[in-house]
Length: 153
Image 1 (spheres, helix red, strand yellow):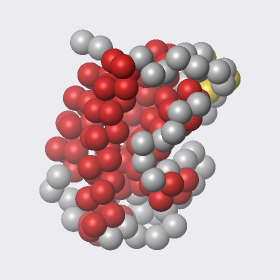
Image 2 (cartoon, one colour):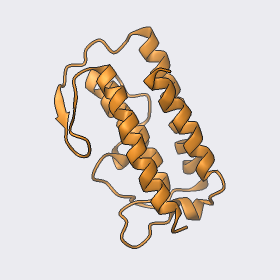
Image 3 (spheres, rainbow, N blue to C red):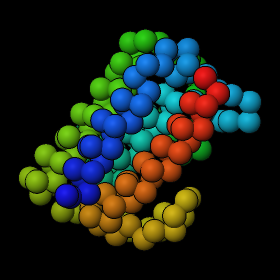
């Protein structure tokens, strides 16, 4: 199974694990935490954009509204409405599917910004395949964050 397919499969699994949570539960930030469950989903979506599209010199496939507030180092600025939550959940799946389609079309040819990603894994990301592999680790890390947050809701 390709790494992209694993990302898609994992994202469906993760949505299933939180499908019973209310908007209040998805927005809840427990003491000692900097973010919430819905922020983590939006963050994973934003990181896919920056690692795969932005670093390839391509236009993002999402609106800035669902990008900038969810980059590394940010925290929720406000509670998400049910409509915003629905959009984030939809983007969580559609962006992974779009990545698979765009990868198949071979559009990631200019992966020019080579730098080491040091926040979590110290993994060198020099091309789109490295970026996709990194996403698997990154999403696993945030699944752990979501699992921890879910214990408090």
